[in-house]
Amino acid sequence: MRLDVYLTDNGISKSRERAKTMIKSGCVKLNGAVCTKPAAEVAEGDKVEADDSSFDYVGRGLIKLETAFQAFDLDIADLVCADIGASTGGFTQCMLKRGAKLVYAVDVGSGQLDPVLLNDDRVVNMEGVNARYLTPADFPERPQFISVDLSFISLTQVMPALVSCLDNGGKMVVLIKPQFEAGKAALNKKGIVRDKKRPSSRIAGYDRVFHKLRAFRGGDSAFRHNRRGRQ
Image 1 (cartoon, rainbow, N blue to C red):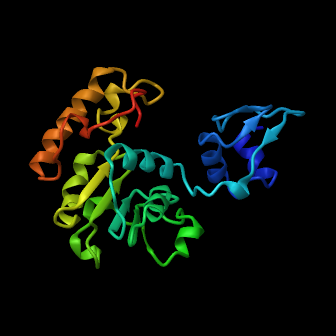
Image 2 (image 1 turned 180 degrees about the horizontal axis):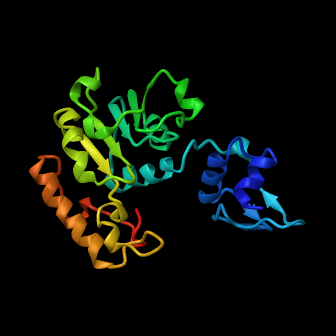
């Protein structure tokens, strides 16, 4: 049985998605050792240790965005924010923990946002919304900070709309995922970019794109990426 299925079936985690997040965040031990693979096999007699009640992340995105806040020394206290590609709301939760006044949780899917966030008055659930077609009119209060974590679409298709929605002087944190920018021909069977130089060239290209959109200003440290070829 898979480890994530084990956690769910045995009532340790409230859902399989939450179980995956717990595992990937290093909060689960298998036979005394931390296991970060949701698909790890749990055999009869194996010892699994985890405590869902002490795990307050609604999604692994919280960890990713928190890393960006620390790296870029960002302060969003009392700001109106938007989480583009919200999913279960990891980024949204991170913004709230950082003192955001309001967070628009935007996602093209539906029924994903964690109930904890759905019941938070500081969160506006904008599900079933394609970020490509967002306009300033969609936000009663224009976002002063926007985070972007999208899959299966190139950022070149969404950035113009997002920049138009950002308040004057606002900031953005954007995850660039090479596998969705380089094209299928550049990927191996596992969906990873084969040419290690390609992600860097694409990132350099976004420097130019963001400057053209008047959405980027910074030095060499403005872009940080994972060398594994994903995100």
